[in-house]
Amino acid sequence: MTINDHLQSFAGMPVVAWDAEDPPADPAAVTWRLELEDFEADEDEFVAAFDKLLERTGPAGPTALIIGEWGSAYERAFPVDLLVQHAGRLGALRALFIGEMTYEQCEISWIQQGDITPVLTAFPALEQLWVRGAESLALTPMRHDGLRELVLQSGGLPADVVRAVGASDLPNLTHLELWLGVDQYGGDARADDLAPILAGRSLPALTRLGLRNAEIADEVAAAVAAAPIVARLTELDLSMGALSAAGAEALLTGQPLTHLSRLDLSHHFLDPELSQRLVDELPGVTVDVSDPQKEEEWGRYTAVAE
Image 1 (cartoon, rainbow, N blue to C red):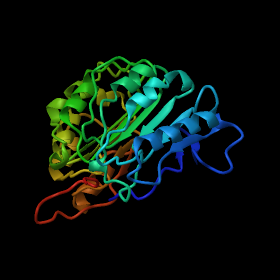
Image 2 (image 1 turned 90 degrees about the horizontal axis):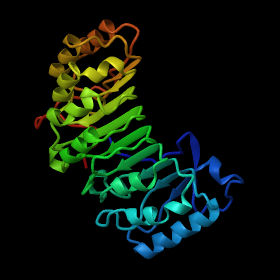
Image 3 (image 1 turned 180 degrees about the vertical axis):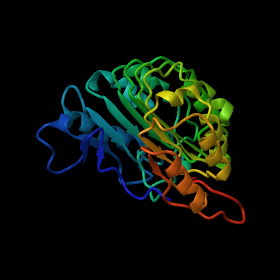
């Protein structure tokens, strides 16, 4: 699978380009998308576009913001300082997506990121943070009372970022989604790195957990099967990974999952019989076992890597 299309809505609102010829009457009723057409634009061009966005969205700035290509994203990290320095002009910001690009703009594993901790520190009222790309991505463990949703999409999520999420105090986070990816692209996390997340002590409000796109999907499934946090989840998403019979059996023989409303295992390496068994043994749960894959000579693969 490749990421072919841009989001048409985010944070429950339609997406509008920062330079749209017919801007909305209410700037707070849409999600603004800030992006440069030139893949190799310099930083001054992005700063100029950002300034124009602030002019359009008023003294409080946008409620929701998607940032796409900022210019040479394959070699230059998103300028986090630009947001931090203008925090006073972004008082309304509640939802932010950094790096929402298609594969034609920049492969997910080429997107340069940096330390996103300053964003969380500068915006205590931020409720949704999505980040795509994990090259040089960093996070320092912290407390954030406002965050409700954290999504880190990658072809390979570094173990230190996974550990930092687990070490953070996020008392109101209800949705956590990590694309763990493959070791070849920096996804070196193992089940032990997920242990603090799966214990759930610093995530008391979490009800939706996604550990997706994982090369180590079987290892993740085995850890999830005994994880304390699962008992209070409503949705569990292990999709897009390299799940095989070993991981499925671990889920079936582990703690009960019948309390879930949804279990997503799509993009998997299970035979039809085992897929049907998962559906049959979890009555009342919407079990997604679509998109079966066939193991290649070199092994199993995730949905998104490069």
